[in-house]
Image (cartoon, rainbow, N blue to C red):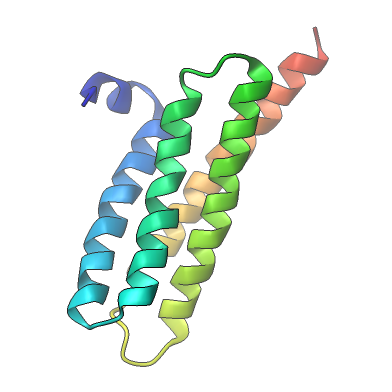
Length: 122
């Protein structure tokens, strides 16, 4: 693992830390035998950071934007599953996971908008 990349880039750091929290929450869900939602959250919640990580080596600005948009979509899906857990009975509390994903979304949206603007201003 390249720890420097994690610490040098805000969105990489936020998404990596979020993924670690999602892994822990998915483990809690599995302990409660909530396997389907654990699996859904694990996939979408870790995919956010995986796509951001991949975007760091994109082939072009357009490729970078595409990968970041995929991350934004995964944020939306993850938020959906978190809300299902939040509003379902007998599920462990989601803590501050919604706040964290909203922070990630704000940074992602800013990065996407800024990168698009750089392409337009050429």
